[in-house]
Length: 455
Image (cartoon, rainbow, N blue to C red; front, side, top):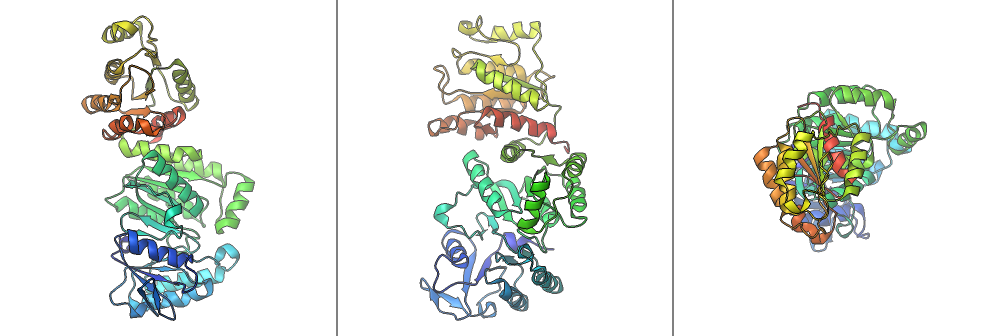
């Protein structure tokens, strides 16, 4: 199944354009692609006409050039006929955003789409979905441009059975600076399923990390997914819902999927090296961390802070997640003391976390990070940077980035998410160091490296 024409199309037909409702999903999709994306877009309405001076065509067969992908946004009962017309016209694939299929008890109508697609070798995503956001090529989300917060182009593929969950996580990605190669809402996943997308993004040269929000699988679908993920070669992150009887019932009514036994599925995911995000907040933190670091480690972290309270929170969170925070020996503490500023040597806490206190300066963070980078019994350094400390400058992120470039020990950083600290954060990011905006998220980033067992 070749999905490249769907995710990186040159031409797009939007079918179901309304001449009277400008907020119709088809109209929203048509306009945003016409004005803001690389794909060449054509509108289709059964009566023809024009829309904001753009010609509309009566049938996909009338379009002046071959079409890579069609967005079908008609009433459910009309979709089979539209799909037949697309196949006859040589369209290479489709996104069916229309609802009213298996999720409403119309499994027969959905089965008819699948039969048509299989006979015509015609891949499609959906129905009952938002479809694809794949910058800079295409955006089939019928969310108006002014209401949608979109991440920049990046190297994380995010696949979700729920369009709403996907949009929420795209907003988080945008806030955290995590770029996407694609965001995909698969809805009822009648033909193209999670495993098909896993295979596609495994081969996609623009994707390094693949993340899923899963609700459930069809019979044997879960087994095929974990087997494929186990051979993927790229980090695969999964956030699963339907963990309780109530959640399973909600999953069934949402997309007509079966949630299955969560405990069994969770254990199998771990067995095959899939990184499970057990909490919603972990998904984006894991994706950001694994975009920077591919190494797997045992989970031994060093913590550097300028605040004892932040250090205490970090060590509590680390131990709760099963990370080790080994204390420095007396000899190591004496060695570290010698490289710090004389003004803080007597007041610094040298165990682990290393609390440099509010009197520390950039050089103290740099020397502490360099010292911990050379300790063989540590796998990763968590730096808790408080930009309001008087001795800390906006250059600290870049300076710690230099330590990482020279020493090669993974570093994750916490910096409060405030616009005025953007230069400090940029210094980390430009050196491929992930930056969290809470202590909890910084520990989650380190935890992601421990759970990544495939490398």
